[in-house]
Amino acid sequence: MEQNADPEHRLMVERSIPQTMQIDPRRDRFPCCIVWTPLPVISWLIPFIGHVGICREDGVILDFAGPNYVCVDNFTFGAVARYIQISKEQCCISPYPAAYRSEDGFHDEPQRDVLTWDDALRKGTQEFQHRSYNLFTCNCHSFVVNNVNRLGFQAGGWNVVNLAVLIFLKGKWVSKASMVRSYLPFVIVGGLGLTFGGATFLTFLAFFTFLVVGWFLLGTYCFRNLIQL
Image 1 (cartoon, rainbow, N blue to C red):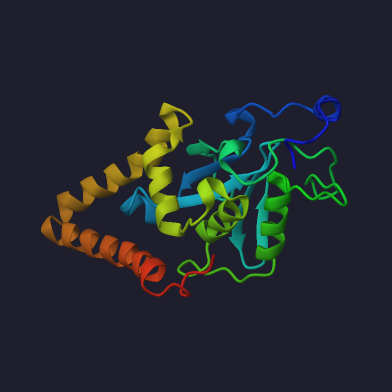
Image 2 (image 1 turned 180 degrees about the horizontal axis):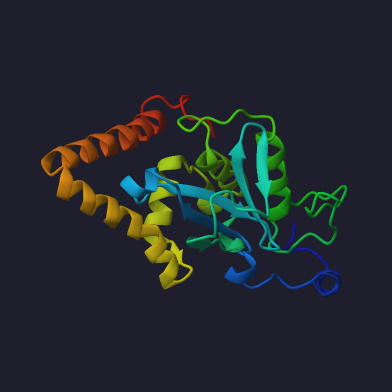
């Protein structure tokens, strides 16, 4: 449908809206990105686990922060440490931003058949505004996965496990300071634990990691209705 559109009409639409913003960490603007930041306590023990959000076309961060609550433009656990910018060409949406903006900050154009990035995020946000929050069954990863699948990124099929792996392997650090902020507590806790606890601390850490990772692996691949998406 998009390929058959009038080129002159496309040009008029593109000129009537601002160009997609560039990534600007100082203003917490990450257009079309998945963003990550460490969690207190949990990330001190398992540094690859953290809090995630997804961003609108204008770079504003959305994250599922509590029961029936999606936080807008105020990342719940602090500044973004890592991010992945998603190409619209890898999604099943219109590559062009919507031309109109509604009062809630999302783009909205009545009677439009082609889904845009912000359309998908608006639908996901509305859904999670009526969901209870649970750290183990319906959390921030569930919210991001729901939106990523709604966008059709790489044909969909995303879950909390492969999303976490994607961020860990391909996430870009905002700065060296972000890297230090993410890993320094783990190094300190690990050093103190080894100094005062030795093998006991290592056993506890391995057991804790096994329980947390094992829960999400079982909930994702064995009991598929356990973790909500």
